[in-house]
Length: 211
View (cartoon, one colour):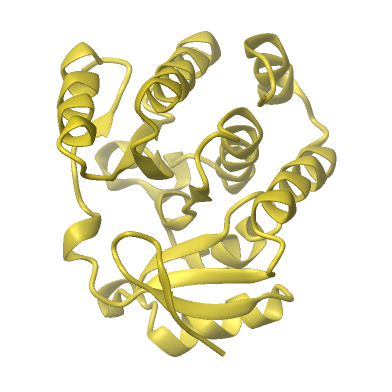
């Protein structure tokens, strides 16, 4: 059982980022003791509607529930840092956990940092908040096997955040994206530098090649 709503709120309000990272990393190691972190080359199947406080909740859940009923596994993407309260953020996580308990159909969860207002990088969600969101998600959603870090790694510090995220609960760094300066070799390097073994995966999060 993952951490409770109250514990999740306490984590969001806490300044103990290192402690959160250690706790989330322990959950990752429990779920993925093989010490592998994955990435995907073809990102076309990675996209889909994202859960937000202001939108795609009853409708979003219905769409995923229908897909799971049809035997399809999906990825839960949740936008954060768009003005929602911490309580609302936890409510969204709880909705994801509840649907996973019902259907077991989520292959992965991806927290997605909201875009900076007017494109101003200085106003974007901070790296600390992105890592904190990732860690809380890993501890709260221990019924979802995979946590992808790609959605928190925006901005000029993207690769650095991706590497750090692998010690904050993530076991997947998302897709190769030349436009964002993330080549396959970049992703493999940061995985190795985090002390893990890189593996290409398919859309179902099945590792195809480990090196």
